[in-house]
Image (cartoon, rainbow, N blue to C red):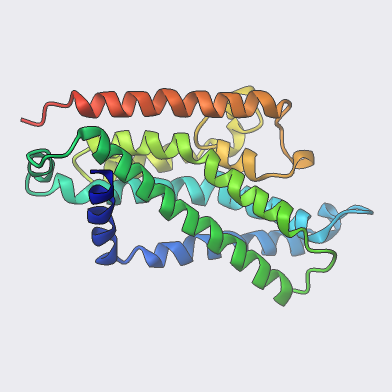
Length: 245
């Protein structure tokens, strides 16, 4: 049942132009990161620092609390858009398919979209870094670790944006929510609230430890898992009880 849902969702993606966002979002984040890093090189670099890691802190700064959360909002809204047109939800739920499978299918598709985005971020970061002449040993496993952590930290936000996108009948509502709550993210990140604020969690997870305001990573990931679990439970429950008549 879930397999069929994933197949249908992938068909919708093939007809879309979302590949442009896959490229534009990460590319913009990397370009802004390198512009800021190279412009303020002496400020960021201290004796013994690795240029790649210091440059990555800027990629996490621009991508984590700004571009990535907005992309998640767009991805979630898009994956629910067709169901809001012409009674699509009603038609979908007349099929022999569980509501939970619909929610999980959309959730997994958005995770795939975020994964593609983050992998392209890594590729652009590496390629442009070499073009710009970034020196020092290349910490590939550390950087890939930041990429994986960034994806995992998006999970609560993905579920939250899906809940909003399923309920909202227009594409603009979930997008507006994403933008509005993204704006204060960089400020919230430096407060204790940042560890449970879904729009800041990706940046905190993507940042090196010496550049992150996280005091306890054990607490951070406990809160991340806890918020994801609660939101997933609510999302599955609310869709199963949703009266679309």
